[in-house]
Image (cartoon, rainbow, N blue to C red):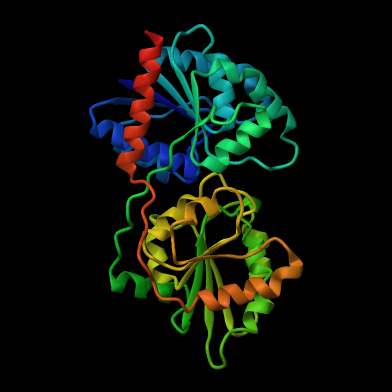
Length: 368
């Protein structure tokens, strides 16, 4: 089979990483993969370069503003040029665009939902999604929570959207020397405990919730100890989060080191992994963290309780409520002393690919 994957952009986000992993697994199984990207090339070329290393050359359509949707003829031309057996789009904008651009082409279209979209002002987007939903051959989501959320928003029958978990292979432990050098580089050599997280610095990820807990958390650091808090990633919230970090009490060091390639390896530096998201479709970095056995604390929203349901080394805390800051800080202060436990792998990359291939084949069978 030849599969055309369609993405909004090629930044270092979860959906982009999943599409990359899926492409690699498809190539291993003898399938062909093409890639179309709605927007222009990204500044951070990590994902783009990994696609190129697989000899998958992205076609960028430079549709950088929503107002440029009238240029859907570019996407239609790209689909026709690729001549795929299956067109597989990821995220709401590519899903909508491929439905419209693919009208009359006779190519089965799979849409995948990667997020429980809760940002305000998305009513028109959901209305368009609802109106055009019959144009896709099938729709999948990366978690049951995300599938059920999207079905409710579109008024679909429960079970209409299929669920295929993102695939994550266990993180290979880095060397002790690498971890020590990273700790030194980040100025955490004197820290007895390190609380960490990884993700795009975007309001969705709730890192401001975590940093708002600094006074309460500081009060729970044992006398004579110094703790570190690390948030690895880049994004539009960087300046705001650094301003919050600058207010850290003396017994806490807060570091926002920016982008780190293969950042998931840094999870082995953490005594506690925290995911305070406002909403999530899946939680790829959480799934990766759990493969190390590290204790985790999550905001119990959308897919996060679903991912943690069989992971014994986890706790939940209400990061969003200011009146619960003391209780949330207490949960973190207790969890940071837990030892690493038994790792959990929810779905490996190969398992994910096999499930998508099975779905592709069913769509082709239905076509004939």
